[in-house]
Length: 98
Image (cartoon, rainbow, N blue to C red; front, side):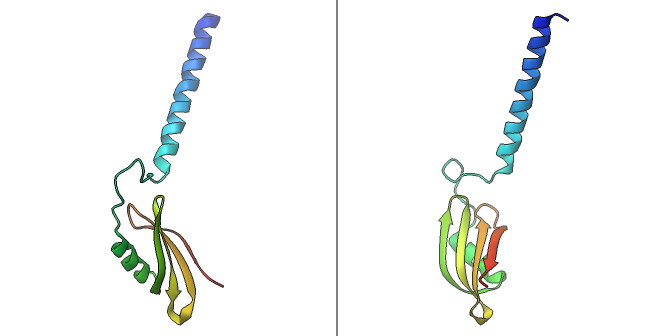
């Protein structure tokens, strides 16, 4: 194999590896609402999911990027935040106040 063909093979391998890692990282990220279809989870559905996860009162709810950000209170007045994926309704973050 000549040096030129070895260099061409190396460049091809590096290019394919870069393309594969870029595709994998794009699939791992949630979709951006600006470039994707509208969220499948409505505000009403997000509230229902929050209630199923222990909130008894929702004080604030906002669609931010690809997630619903919900702030409210659980039983006993404990402050709780909950983040839901706006596309499938899964819980992606949240915490109770100390």
